[in-house]
Length: 199
Image 1: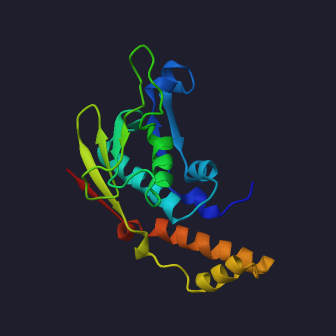
Image 2: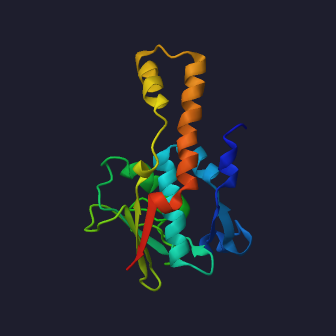
């Protein structure tokens, strides 16, 4: 499997999942997500998928500063509706990592470990997403601004060729290279693209 090597340099998100421990999937319920994991699930790497990963990474580190985040113990709220803009893409990535879903998630096992109703939309918040620990009510607002890292100017010219069907194989290869270059620069400039506020 071939992919951009910077994927392997991105910090992983370590979680503890009580459900997976009870069901014998992972020793102590401990495992981790990589950026490559979410790229394979989404089918692509872009500023939106990167942003969803970054939002989740920084939020969980803020909520669980000294230990693994507990999967299934985090509620996630969005200001926008599920079908607005790229909210659906972002929510899918966050759901994969945190386990939080709206109504479609796991209903629980003997009254424990439920994952549904932990994600909601059209909420009165002023951030990209709000993450709240269910056990203690601690919340953080996370705001993501990918526009702080500009794309290479050549991308627009190549995008025009792609749209018109005039792009050569070299053009397509170069477009992909420049696209992933921006994603890499977003990860390299976290302080410029993301802001976390503890409530």
